Length: 136
Image (cartoon, rainbow, N blue to C red):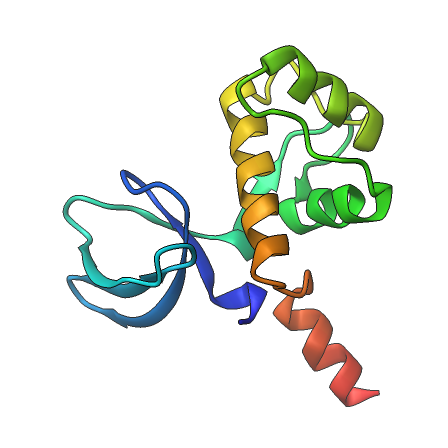
C-alpha cells in the first residue's frame, strides 16, 4: 500500500485507501477492516495524508515528517487515552510543535494513524520523492 493513496474521511474513524473517486464521492477501503464502501461528498470530506500539515513554531510541516520523526525515535507509542503522556511523547519526538495550536485530539489521532501505518507496513514516503528519485 502506498502512502499517497491514503485519506482520512471525516465522520469515519481510521484511515482509508482511496480506490476511485467520482463526482459525488469516492470509493474507499478501510485500512483496518478492509471493507470497501462509498463515501458521499455531501456527508464526508476527504483529506489526503500527503496534504495535511501540522503547526510548528516555525513554518508548518507536513504530517509525514512527524511520522518519520516518530519512526526514527523508536520510542514506544503512548496510551492515546492519556493526554499528558501523548503530549510528553511529542515533546520528546517533535519538540518544535506549536502545542497551543495543535490540539490534544490531533495528537491522539497522529498516534492512532502512525500505529495503523506501522501495522500495515506502509512506507513513509511522499509521491513527489518517488518521481524525483526516478529522474535521477
